Image 1 (spheres, rainbow, N blue to C red):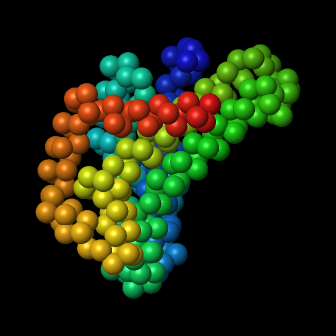
Image 2 (image 1 turned 90 degrees about the vertical axis):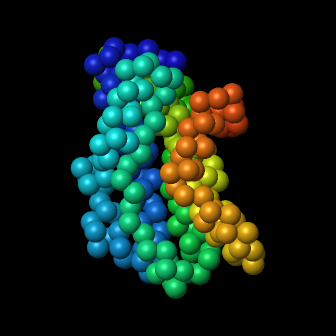
Image 3 (image 1 turned 135 degrees about the horizontal axis):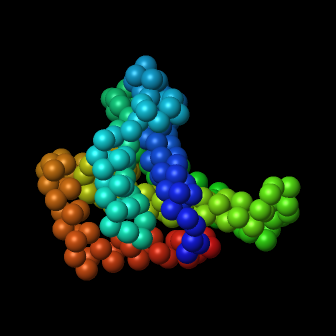
Length: 227
């Protein structure tokens, strides 16, 4: 892991996390808009202004606690963007609802791939000479590569985590609408019986036991693959 002074590391971690979690939420609303749901747009939630998306617990307290505990990576979430699925269903059917459900995850994985490409480009790649125009070019290069490395890690973690098929995570909605696309209501009926609070309790149990390997193993595999 690249090492930087605390004064430089902390703002990079915060900015990378905000880009990851806020972009995830905006994409839900943006894709919903494409299928006729203007709810997020009308609420002003398609803006990149972070103040409109920051959640006290998910965007500040949880990442801050993880940082204080020297966790290997930060994690968090932004305020959910409002989406009216009935409007999406009217405009795009089950496919539209599925697309809205996976929009945030698609954003995360796309940003992770782009980050990996930029790490290669700036770290000995086609843009490596770019830093020669700055004073202390090695340090500037370290800052840039560290930023994109954190962006890659955050987005892989968020992408994998949100694909878990447990309500209220995106994976449960995506699986429900995917089933409906193929004429099966099995997952809809299954997840309707699981209240969001119960789903989060199950998720916490998984994360707090050796079962967490089922989540972190694919995270590590994807990160290694991209790097």
